[in-house]
Image 1 (cartoon, rainbow, N blue to C red):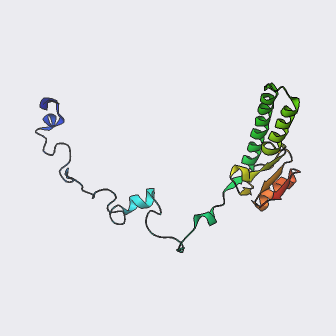
Image 2: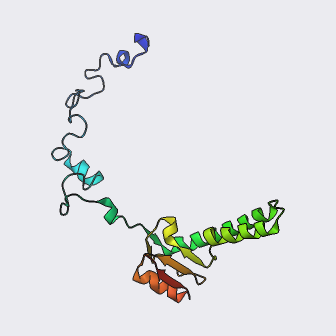
Image 3: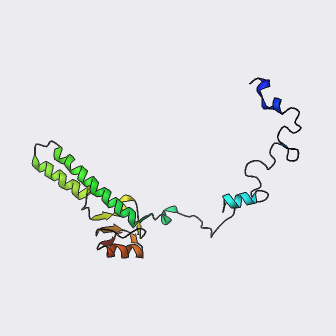
Length: 172
């Protein structure tokens, strides 16, 4: 860029070139990076990054994450999963009917094995197949009665499932 187009040419004659007499345009007046988080930038850190510094709770030596891994799922998500499963079932069956098999026994056997292994009845769902262990009770009660299998249920989830006329099965 040519010198005559630069901002400094306009600022000539103005003592501080727009950076103020008191604060001055120095290199790193507050320190570099996150410096002063516990001192002169404490208000900023407390306001926008609470809990950034310090320790909390008891130390656990040789912690194994697998023992504390217990993914949970809310009832409202369970019902949406069931509806998706029913849609999938409706879409898959025509696909098998359109397949060209000369032998009808093979076709029937294929349908039966597929249904046994992959599509249990739409009124029951096993949560562990989807990678979840516990069912929690957030959301409205189920509209239709369903049989829900999982490793664990919260008290509220149990009540809502029973109220809707369904059942919960604790599986290992």
